[in-house]
Image (cartoon, rainbow, N blue to C red; front, side, top):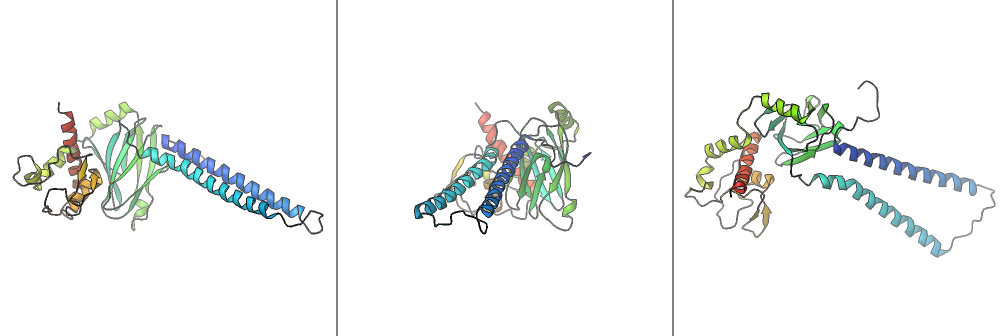
Length: 315
C-alpha cells in the first residue's frame, strides 16, 4: 500500500457485507458510549453536593419498570445484532448452483492447491473475478487457518475434518494469504497470495498450466489400486454398498440413523468404516487410516462425487 489506511480495500462481495457490519457495530457502540457518558455528566452535575434537585425515593413501580426496560432493551439489541451478523454466515453456508470448486490441503508449512482439472499450485491460488469460489479444505497435520484479509474471510482447517469456505472475488489483483493459527516453528512463513483474474485470463491461465489427471481420474486409479473396486464395483461378488449415486443422498445406518453422504461422511467411511455402517451390510471393511495421504483422500472423494454426477447425466 502506498499510504497507511484504516482498512484494506474490500475485494470480495463478502468483504462489503462484513465492513457494513463492522461499521454498524462501531456506530452502535459509539452511540451507547455517548449516551452513558452524557448520563454520567448529567447526573453528576444535577445531583452535585448542594444542588436543590429532589432526592426522594422513586416509586416502586417506576424503579421496577426502569429495570425491566433496560434489561429487555439490552437483550433485544443483543439478539438483533447477533441475527444481523450471523445472516452473512448463514448465506455463505448455502452452496450456489454455479461455483469453482478447488481443493486445498494445509500442511506445515504451506498451502497445497489443486483445481478440478488437475492444475496444482503451492502457496498460490488463481481464481476468476465475479465467480463464486468453493474451497474444500483439509489439514494434513495440525490446525491451520486460511485467512485472506482483503476478502474478510477466514476458515480454520482442522485435522480429520472437511471444511468449506466460499467467497466471490470482485476486484482483479493480487492479495495476501496467511495462516492465522499458530501451527509450529515456521508458522510465520506460511503465507501465499490470491491472484484474481478476469474469467478469460483465468481460462487462459488454466490452459497453459501443466495438467495431470483431474481429481476424479486420480481417484479412479486409487479406487482400483487400493482394492476398493473389488468390493464396491457393480460386478463384485463381495456384498458391499454400491457407490454410484450415493454422494448427496440419504444413507440409512444399522443403528437407525439416516445421514447424508457428504465429503465428511465419505472421509469417515474410509478412515473409520466401522463407525457408520450402512444398514443391511456387515462391518467388514478395513480402515485406511494412515494408508492414504490427504491428497489421496481428496481424490477418492472427488471420484465418488463423479459417480453421482455420471448417474444423474444418464437418461
